[in-house]
Image (tube, rainbow, N blue to C red; front, side, top):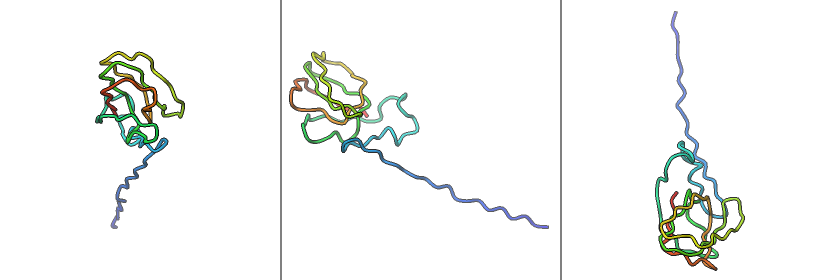
Length: 108
């Protein structure tokens, strides 16, 4: 008597989630939101262009106000953010209007 075993090849599906034009890279990672950021990019505030990736946090190098659109869609102004602050927020945009903070880095 013979036995035949068939093994199916594993399949991988990658899903990309976008929020107002920004890619939500955290949805692609097994680590989820409890692990540290995987990458970083300098931010040029813009009233029209979204961040390339939804933030895990923003680093503010130069003190000032920061206006962002949160991942959920609401706009918020962080007033008087000190230099060297890391804000653990998920946002899709850093707005240029009324943003006076400088040297902003997207940690994603």
